[in-house]
Length: 94
Image 1 (cartoon, rainbow, N blue to C red):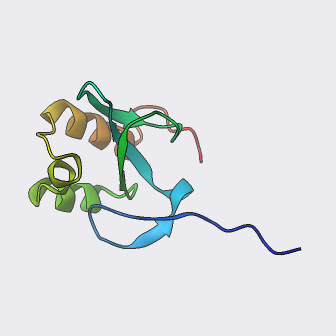
Image 2 (cartoon, helix red, strand yellow):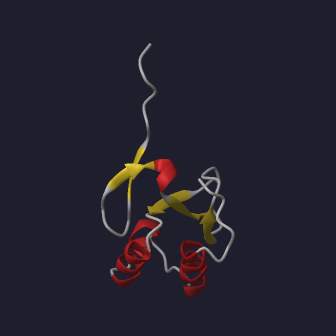
């Protein structure tokens, strides 16, 4: 039996390809709402960020999430991401 293929996604901050489960997904829904997707299963356009504050800072400075979604990303989303990366929002341990 062949081993199962691990999906690889590219971080919007550092540009490094990593397994999907190691990254945090940010999703833009059909109505334009942008939110965190901790399950990785919400419908919509997704972008991935490493769970590293430096990668989030790079993505925010270069407006890479805005490019991925073709719309403006509110500061609340960045603040929520920062809280999660700092461990203030109860990380799920995966």
